[in-house]
Figure 1: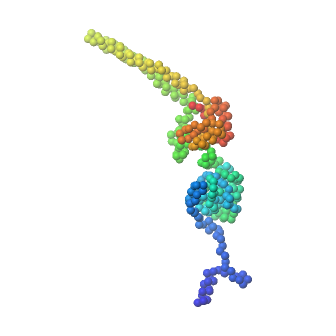
Figure 2 (figure 1 turned 180 degrees about the horizontal axis):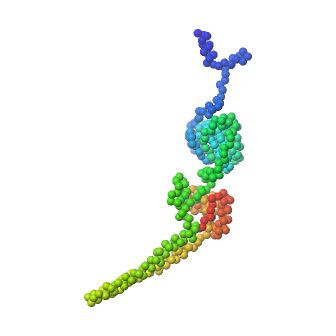
Figure 3 (figure 1 turned 90 degrees about the vertical axis):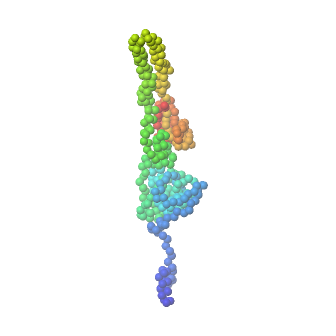
Length: 357
């Protein structure tokens, strides 16, 4: 019985013999794929008065700013406030388009408005030197070969650079670039996530090109002024019909009848003629006076951003529905070209010259 107990104990506890001494084997740390599981979420926490609740979001894709991770050691790692730990994300620098694979291992950043905190190795591989760089963070599921490289403190192969067009869209999403089309109708459709079905550019196009819209406006005004009096003169011709009524033998019995059409009916025929007296023809002349030029710098959803842009380019802020336009007035085309160059040098690449209405 005692011998059986000894055999069971020997099977339950592995023993190593070195130089006649018996030692218990120490437990080995997790390695390989098992080191990525289980993923931990944790309880909600607050940073600068804002509460963050960790969640296992598989399709996480956001833009924000990357800051240095003071707790980051060697390797390509980072900190995030809500994604599970550990997990893997692709981080893209919006200034260069460079994209790398990062293993998130810690909670953070614990102060400021940073979206992700990166270790010194991750910052170096991404080519970031500043303490507050715009980035895109997208959760991915890399192969085990790349996971093993990051677990061992190495870096995975660099991803393909992000195209410039996508970088521009991401910068606009972050708010560091003005919208592509500053017209309020297009901005409202973009915010609603729909395409403009009424084609708003068509009605706005004739405004800068006044010669194109002039032929359409003049016929409308002339129809109300000149053609209207033209049909009125034929109205006296029916008045000539009373002689036909007075021609029968009625003059003897109804002598007072002929004077009635002569006094009442010709008078209303003359009344339409005073209508052209106000001469509304002067209105087209006032409309035809052309204005100067204006440089459309951009449109912003908040007045603060619009005023900031106006100070940079020397423009003015004009409310337009839910948005605020920034424009630079110019008396001539040369001044407009100079103002356009100033706006583009300030970083507003979508600025354009328009004719003032």
